[in-house]
Image (cartoon, rainbow, N blue to C red; front, side, top):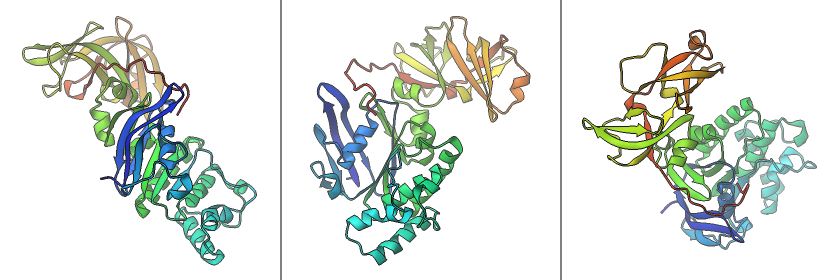
Length: 369
């Protein structure tokens, strides 16, 4: 039994299915991210956990207790939203202390606990300031302090960093992870950002069109996608499809692009199977001359993007299929130019496979998170 249990939860809005039979658990102290593209149902799932939406089917349990029919105020849950939802007419201290005031905590104890919460988020000198005097990152930390000040059983966070710039997002990821580990609170975090999900989470739950596609540790999801959607959505990959053969006992995919891709002998596939092969950009090589190794194929460089820490080559195969190669650093920039013919290498042990999947023709709410 998990600390939080989401059991076969479905949410319909009329004829539209926003969440379709989703089940997962979170253990005590675990950090779980709900990851997926816009419209996949992740925020609707979070709102059902919070009690802001009622499931059409299924149950939500916290510490073994069914809370499906409980209103939000009866669930011991802290929430942090994308938009900080701070009261502009109240000071930082009054904002953080608001949940305590609503619970009847006296002013002296309230001020002490607010001070502790602000210390935890490293804003000890802001209690008497107004929210509009703070930066976006500071306001988000105030919102986090408010969600934690009453010591809830569960913390829910709905894309809390998406309004921040890149540097602040990185800083806040570290802060959120530090605080979560420090106090050990079970956390459910909604995001469309793979870097956020992978860097902070113990478990990632990948959603697609309202359904759970895969759940597991970040490493397992990245290296072993169980569906075509997950392999395509996670990481920067090029995708080739084809049929598996077993030439000389070695599994090989004869791709629709006309390539023969030799797989690792341990690949989980069988002759005759339709297979999708994902070529992770950072695991491919790029060469001026054809190397003598398996899975070396000719391509033409169409675009070169120098991104500081890496250089990305957007290449095209003879049949027009796009293949992306990423190399660390800048040394490759001087070796190649747009229009060059090169050879891309994909060692068998770095190829990621996922059997071709049917995502169906279900009606899904347009734009539902």
